[in-house]
Length: 264
Image 1 (tube, one colour):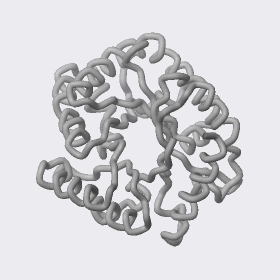
Image 2 (image 1 turned 90 degrees about the horizontal axis):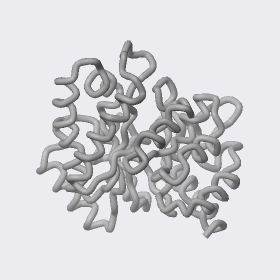
Image 3 (image 1 turned 90 degrees about the vertical axis):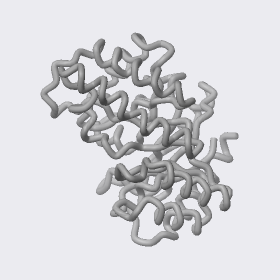
Image 4 (image 1 turned 180 degrees about the vertical axis):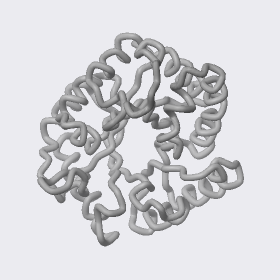
């Protein structure tokens, strides 16, 4: 297990500026949150990859900027729009491949969208997306997100049951807490299909602070991950309002590295 960081921590800073800033702070493992269509163009991706190669950086995952639009694009009752959406998401899969990432994050269907899609139909569509992702050597990961269908443990169980070889998940600690769930329980529900973790901390006043700045006890979660032989990474992912100075990110990184070393 290694600790990396999401460029989303600096949103709305330009994506390339976020990478440059994080690299200057000593980070070398990244999740890139793409924020616009032009960032999926080959020239932009090649410049980003070349910069990372020069600085020995590595991208393991990408996060599409269309998360809030996925309900309408991928999980409405209009089948043709879903088919077109699969083709469009191919751009994200290609982008991941081009910069060396092997994971793409999906939020999925929000509970606020008036969709008639059943869980079984959702799984069918997820499988189609997963199969398209596989064409690029990429794995699509379902994230647990508050106010999305994926916040429900029963939904995660359904995905595992109906997609025994296609379901794959990312655990987001802050989203679990916002959903009034214990992150450990969410991880246990995802089980061996857990591939990636978005890490943050929490206090009584704030659901999302930097690792080491709150009161969350990571040890039971780490012990469980040892049991299932988790081989993914931990990506620090907080909001820009979660810290005042960039040095706090470095301290959070050091905290996580020290913690993970205890469980190697």
